[in-house]
Length: 114
Length: 112
Image (cartoon, rainbow over all chains, first blue to last red; front, top):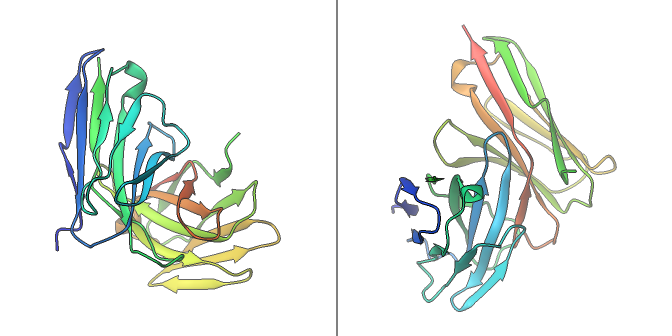
């Protein structure tokens, strides 16, 4: 099993450009998450999904959109990139139906908006 | 202010020394998770604590949960260079672990 796979690993965007960060998992996990990690800070939840077709906002959703058409994929869309979105983005997933299972994390996407 | 405060923010210890990292919550905890992040990589799960007074150990790392104080501590005994990284605590506020709130992290360096 590959686990949680994120692409790309690095990306530089110009202000106003758009892009999609890809996240896929092969563990049949219902729950999926997008976090961002700013330098010297912890993780902040952007969006999460408890299953295909269901998404919900986290702490910092502004400037982002998500969709969950399949169990495996949870892409994060930046429509009009801004310098404040420079960060490291982590996708994570969790097994279905259990309250106390751990999150599995991808290796992250480092995004710079210049 | 942060819901989850970690202290210290950074730590440099000599190999072989013991150390403790603290995580304090300003809100009710239903579960407390500890993760480790190696520089430039994703997060690796260390352990999860649910009940007040619970203590878990994995190799040389021990974590405890003080439910009354809404605080958890992570203790590393006889630190090694492999322990270097960023340690993050995460809290379940819903009771279902549908989403976790993370602390600001503690950056640990272990010198030879």
